[in-house]
Image 1 (tube, rainbow, N blue to C red):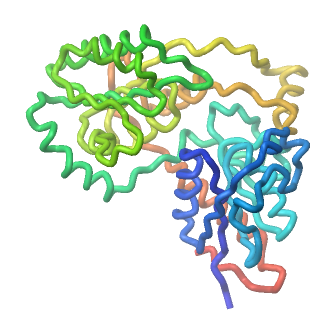
Image 2 (image 1 turned 90 degrees about the vertical axis):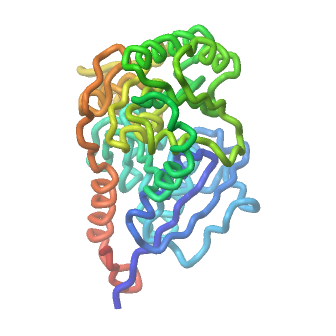
Length: 358
């Protein structure tokens, strides 16, 4: 008798990574168990030292890792990579990892990564166009009904201005925020429209103040509040005619692009980086090998991420003319297709059970 593959999703602290893992598991449509993992200070050890073990995992506070074992393990980012390898060794599960691993790539069946992580080309590395962010249609329609009356008196076009903030690569200071406010207001003024503005958890208070001080056009202003159950962000996605998003985020542009409306990116210089960046020749090959073996973690390169989005016709710079966006690539479908192929190639379980991958 055939059985559906069993999936474990290794949840961690990162909301973005958790959301993408859940999306992949849901798209596969197989029985899924979420395992929430909590770590000790030992997780700070390099993954090369942690190897294929549970070192760094707080086993008392984490969900138990015990039978029935999974056929597929989905993890994301650095912390869970040793646990994913441990499970692959313990029960033979396929190890599917998102984003990056900071460990030898050869130990994973598939690593689905994004341009900013700068992983080298390998047979088991899949380079996606952008973050796997999807807002369910039902949630967007509910938000449309909730927020359309709030915006109805504002002149159109409605331009969604979604503001990020500080990150490891970018500092969103008050001067930068004020420039964004002036440029976005100028666009709305030129088009006779209005701004739907939302800050996010990483937006510094002083930067939000500087941004709002420059808005002299019709606008709906929302300052992010943690735990606010009436956040208009999904309403903006459902109702805005086009979007301006900041360069510091991987998820904001993709969620805006999913609407099929024009998306422009507001950029500013990133923080100086001392990270080594080589390409070509012997030095370039050694650099790639150091990344592939987990010896080196390259600094995230958001220029590369946004370059891919522009090259594929999904976004333009705020300083450039807007245009109708290209069709979104089906990264999720391609990824789940690769996972199904891997499960088929693996064959029956050790007890002879045939797996029905659908």
